[in-house]
Amino acid sequence: MTMNQTDILTVRGLNASYGESKVLFDVDMCVKPGQVVSCVGRNGAGKSTLLKSIAGFVKNCSGEVTCDGKSLLGVRSYDIATMGIKYIPQDKKVFSDLTVRENLEMGSYATKDYNWDMVTDYFPKLKTLMERKAGFLSGGERQMLMIGRAILGSPKVLLIDEPTEGLAPSIVAHLKTVFGELKKKSALVIVEQNLPLVCAISEKVYAIKEGRIVAELVGDSIQANICEGHL
Image 1: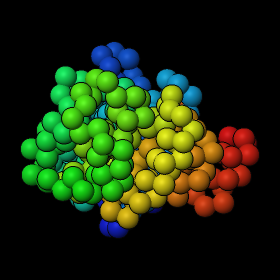
Image 2: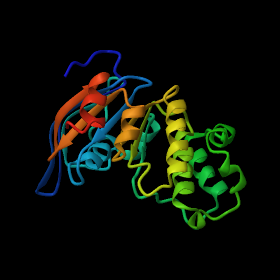
Image 3: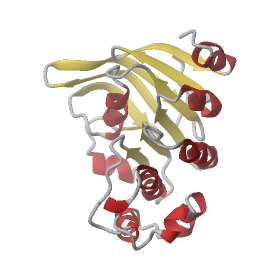
Image 4: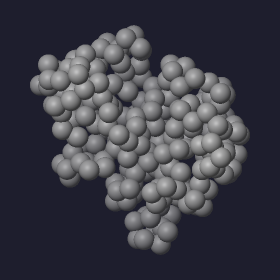
């Protein structure tokens, strides 16, 4: 893998484990500003662990992870977020007892960014749900809220884990459009099982198997290997 000064996020020789169980083995990755990079592979391949390791949620790591040349390994997850790397987990967990408005206020408090118009431009439905408790939102609405909360503060990189899992096709189509807009401001690293979506939005794809990168695809090779089922 070739890395250069234009990369916003670099991962080199990353190893990660949970206790004695090793999950990632010498993973290399590079992401440029405004690039959409997808990670694909079977359940248990290590895709989510990769995102969590970058975001500082997996402590037992070795290797190198840098953003804009600054090392992230060993840095607290909160500090990584303030450096501009936001992680959106797969579980779609929000502050259930708080309203949508209060959830956004939590995001604004951390980033000092109160530009909610940007959030509702991407997700107009949230504007009508501001006083609803987040625990009563649908899965798609929660995903909108989580992304909306994460983009406050204009992050450099968004790490998004399984954003379309369990969502209706209409919501998936809307997220596809949103991702196309978000990449104008942030790099996106997405773990995703929806391969047609991966092919539609990705400029680079990393295939992960048993904790290792087994393929790095760009351009036409994404269509040939992912969408046509050759990988």
